[in-house]
Amino acid sequence: MDLLAPMRLYTLSKRHFVLVFVVFLICFGLTVFIGIAGPRIIAEQEHSGEQLLVKNLSVKTGPFNLVSPPLTTYNQQLWLTCVMQAEHSSVGDFQQPFEINVDLKGVMQDASVMHINHVHQKSRTLHCGAKCDEIIVLHLGYLNYTQYQVMVSFKGLENITYDIKVNFVWKTYNPTFSQVEIWFRFVFVVLTFMVTCMFAHSLRKFSMRDWGIEQKWMSVLLPLLLLYNDPFFPLSFLVNSWFPGTLDAFFQALFLCALLLFWLCVYHGIRVQGERKCLTFYLPKLVIVGLLWLSAVTLGIWQTVNELQDPTYQYKVDIVNFQGMKIFFLVVVCLYILYLIFLIVRACSELKNMPYSDLRLKFLTALTFVVLVISMVILYLRFGAKALQNNFVAELSTHYQNSAEFLSFYGLLNFYLYTLAFVYSPSKNALYDSQLKDNPAFSMLNDSDDEVIYGSDYEEMPLQNGRAIKATAKYRDETDSD
Image (tube, rainbow, N blue to C red; front, top):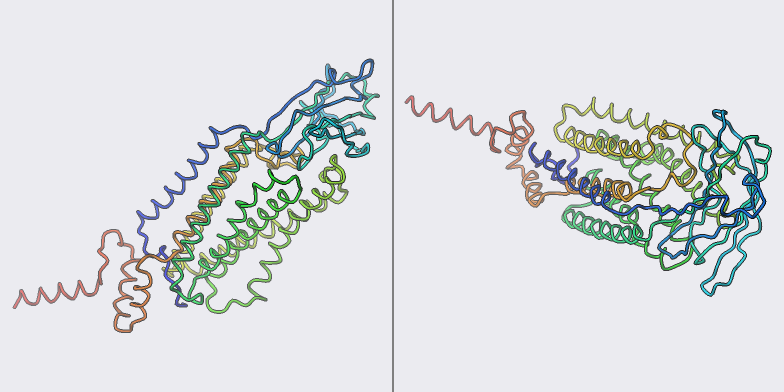
């Protein structure tokens, strides 16, 4: 086994391990409770289609004249959605294709009106069961104007034999939540910066060649976590541009994919000692995770670029190849999961009798399992049964609905990395202990100490040389008999 920089993980007792998990769960629970007490993320303003309709016209055709509520940069984004409901209909589940025309204008601060886009005509499908699916009319990723005027009309619904009720809903980010988000992102940025500095400071006396694979990866993940918390986030309230939002999405995709790559490399690297060749060790993992990152970034950039030209654009509806891209993404995800399970099973079978490596493996697996279980619970509470289906409400479903969801995800990933940084950093006496181990005069003593520390009776036995205690006792017995 290679000589590695010591980890605090090796010096923790069972009680300490329990305490680490308890502190992690308490910190996570605290963020959830703060989120529950926080404001709603999305502010809504609903209007009946009949009140917006020009006189003597049908709700099945329109046009509808809509004016958004007054907006500031703290509203961040704007959605206009349409909810239809079939009235007095005996028809169960049905679908009706139709076309929607949207004309968008912006109101300046001096009350002058600017024509933003020409009329956009889009094909949509009205799908109704017990309730009809929400249809996104337009989405603005950033706000250039203090108010928007929209004229909406339908074509293709006039032949429906039953009556329909049409409601329009303006949705924006709650300004109060935007202020909460700024402060919590700032707190996480400061905490992450402090943890990163402390972790780097603890390893300063050890050569980089002596770092374990977990310590090397933490030196990469912690700066990426800093970007994930996005120190540039306040720019989105100072600059009316698509760039801050796109940068935030890019940082999130980069960190999450780096975390996926970390799991693959660590579970493989723990059992592969010595030089890890780039071609055989890193390349297959980079290909799998790189395809996931490329898919996420491609969809994000595609959506942003097209929304700049057409606010009514929805890649889930308007990309012909979206279904193929979704299947490709799911295939790569399945391939990743199978590869990760294979590496975990191989590592568990090969390292179960190696005390140091086995301890590293068990701790990472236990903490990661807790994080994944919590993530699954949050997703299920967020989406319910829809988490297993394909008919998510377009685009808006990928955003958080309340402060608890936002803080739980951010808090979970932040405290997960903070916990790993704590257990993988060297203890205060690590340098002295490593020098002691390198001294041949103490090598046998240290080997015996390791046997005692990782023995089954660690909780009961004192941290002394077991053989020395036995020899002393035997010597005393012989002296007494004499």
